[in-house]
Image (cartoon, rainbow over all chains, first blue to last red):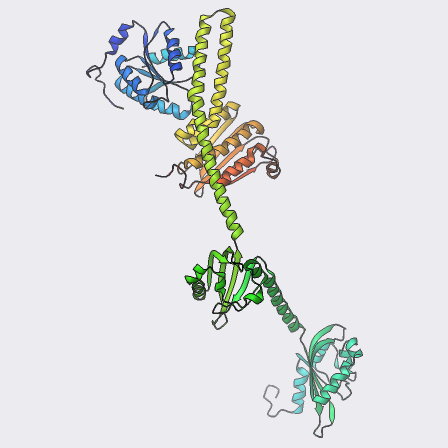
Length: 147
Length: 485
């Protein structure tokens, strides 16, 4: 694990505090998934919740990293298999550069190897695609609350 | 006196000597053929005591047929005329049994030439005759075997390599009759290239030097066609060590070689096919995962959003629709799992099996135990073979065994992996009967997969004792596509 905790001192970074202020008390969420249909509907599901706000939507791992650094969301929901290095790579970098961001996996694959790979990359919660929307929303709140 | 050497040999000594000999019947006949003396050997061989036989005519020793043919009288005539007669033939003992006798009859004449009688020495040759006949018969049988063997060409060469004998197999395999080939040099069986390279002579040299030579290669038949031969040349030496010639045994291996090559080719094609099939399965599994399932997930999520906005029956209908979509997603997940468990590619054999057991076996309400002791992860081709056989065996357990628990064990064994899948269910019947049915429970497929990989496969289990599928596949890190470099 890298130990760069001097966030704010690095140029180009947005203060996490500032971003959260902009949307009031709502939990900010980033979505990273290469499947547009999933991105759209997940965004819609989360936006429908009064306490959640989707601040960024990315189509691959690199974009997810860039947007996470820019917006410093409280929660990043990442697909496991996606271009630009995959969910594990994105999770690792985001955990490293945005210590305030909690990462959650949202995957079509539920095998032990995939789960373990994401856990090692710093993922707090592993969610299988196909669960009810209410479970997804609950998981996002749970992850946001975790330290 | 008795333990001293006699100073002079007396006629009494001679009498004692003759009477004591037990290996020869030695006795005298008068000129008419009546028995005049008897010894211990005669008693032993012919079975008469002296007092029984002295005075009787010697024709009692002959068979009734010989007597009827006048043989005893004729023998005396010949002995009288020529001084001596030797004969071999069956004679009759006192108890009526017969023995094979060597008989020498000597005419005994006094100094005036008058015939005093005959000396007769008979030896029982039955045992020796039996042994000789046995030896002769065994030699004859051996000759007949060699002569008639058709699967092997067995023949002799003289020390220079000229053919000295020939058998039926040689005629069949090489196409020459004995009278055509005997006396010719054995290099006619070799191709012109081999002859030019001096191969025939070299093979004899090696066989002479080392006692034996084995070779495989193309040889030429009488009609010029070629066959793939296994050849063994053995140097034949007499007891003094002198080279008497060579024994040559040749077998036509053409068919076997062709069959083996066809098998190699078949195995190569099958391996290729399995590889292609695995690739295709993986591609389909990924496509279903990354496209179909994702779309259906999105549809399901949207249906839930819709249901939240609708009311009454419409909301219920949307929720039902979502449940249908969710069920379809679960079935598709199982399908992709069976097609290609993602763990197999990511984490190897044990992880692939674990995820399969978790998903499919536990899902069917069975408990499982996975025990493994592998030196190293087997090459991917081997891992796939093991996984697929386990998958088939576990499908049987799930569908047919009525088992509560299943135990899968993997262990490294003799450059390969030994695998056992054992359940506590109802047990199979006689595996031979089951295998006889057309691909019953995928048993033949399992066995073929194992054998194609160069291993073996077996199934056992009696009713009420559960079933065990056991197999071994070699795990040599060689040759597999993608394993190189």
